[in-house]
Image (cartoon, rainbow, N blue to C red; front, top):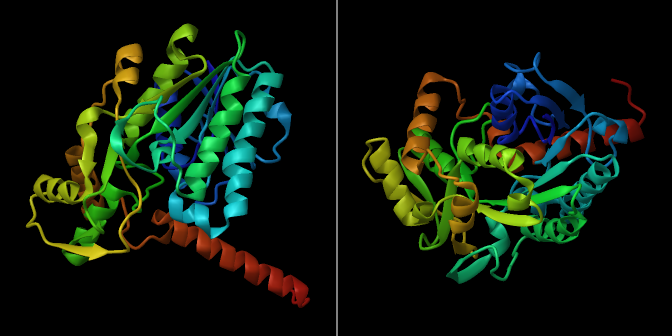
Length: 338
């Protein structure tokens, strides 16, 4: 299968592209490469690389493409609030454009990367049929994209939405602003695990390789199992309260449980039911937060992850790019030639 992965150089995308190649698929990686190309350097000679934006790339990209996995987005809640309008342009309108063009150019399958954060704050254990309560621009953009893209499905165009749990684990495009990864980083740098107040909030978790496996299983499943379907991606046993998660992290890397609080009380809290993907697609994660914590800690110790690399904290890197862009515009306005 010839698969186009938007956001293919990102935290999930760089892992997914490699796994698709291992499964024998042909891969096209479309990305803005805001974080550079190092994340796909090991597979760069095996994939078709397109440096472009989902909002305006030329439709000719779809020629010969059998399936699209749409990962491109501003990738977390804090980043989404830097410029809410821009977030909606990319995460909502941009991905709707990708889906509509996919159908127009006779791509057979389209998979949207969504998020369990669409559930917001709710007390119950939530299934795909539960009401949505998006609290951030990032979550709201995902809800809007889901609602506009799912109705595009028909017999010749298979559409699937994957609402992913909070992702963790090592990736070539490393993110240290995710709960498991960030807790390990905090201990590595300061000897204390950072915990966002008040610690009682629930989150579901999934390893980056497991969520990548879910995308591939959707592509390779029978159409009637996945068409016009929404799946939560994760496992019931990885619904964990944040304070308990910190304890698990400490135990897994064999450190004393020293911690520090940060931030205002988190308004997001949700537990998610993952029976549907387990029963329909036989999906079962292979990794746990303990595994993820160990691999992040080892990668920090051996230098594969640089603790102070600004690119590993998404919102900080976007802010730096915005500041650089403002400086360039200022230089242009003042007529200064570099």
